[in-house]
Image (cartoon, rainbow, N blue to C red; front, side):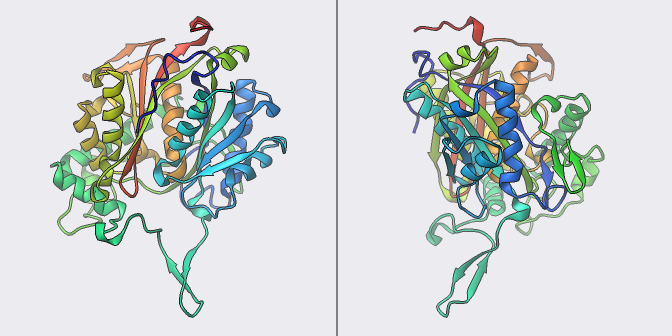
Length: 413
């Protein structure tokens, strides 16, 4: 449910994202196969403090999303690994795929509640090092399982892929359209990497293989012919394939979110003002539609039309659900994910929602937005940005931002 409007809050309660970073997004069992979650996240936290000028001791809390880790509060572990003082606490949240965005949402609400706080918030996933999981059988022996149960079996507890097939069938999202969208994602991501558009947001990491500075998912060789050869992955005669679905990845991403007043005291030049957030529940059998429900409700409450949004980042777990949600919201898919998305970069579960916000800040700073005709238009302060993600179990989270030059934002309401 949406919280009260946040764009008219006094400066000590108005949340704003002033810095956002991520690691490279790397395929599971690849370059990051020996790095645990806290080792992925700690360099991002340290980089955020350096970039924002926020003193270590001034961090109110570290709020981190994680979906398949081993528990034990990875937010606290990573905070200490990053060298923050023991006085800074940590909180780990789990809303599965939405965890990274929901951590940022939670931190924004903490800022809005008062106290002029400053938070490091985001998400991390090391699927490569995730622990094996098992239920205890009656005789005490382990009964290993691949994933946790999302909903009661009366709902069918569908896997993500099966739910993506349900969405494709229900909303008539064709195989051809899914493949074309996947190809677009790869082409945009390859072009963005070649142009250096990911560099400013990416923290290189040291791994066994050496310094890792780039994503390894986008494929310049991807083609329509190649995509057409993929067979249905989840249902006989289906349309969802490995080619138009994301792949699992390891990554971390986080932001500095604080009050407008504190941001101006830190000398922040710009940022994403949080205008509102919403999380919605939907039918678990159509779980991919959760983002559309949350975003639709949020935009309606704020009186904003889809056409008014300049920048849109949607987690591309599956082309089918991405297209169905954008259709439902009346957003031309050509206006979303301007530098490619998870279909090309990969999906690092708990980190992916935070990657969306990192991408939005980078795009807003670049000062361009895309028209339906694929023509870049100059944008600056006042850009509206929307982050959305659908979530296992039948949920979705959306967050609405406005990019502003902070030296031009009044200090008092």
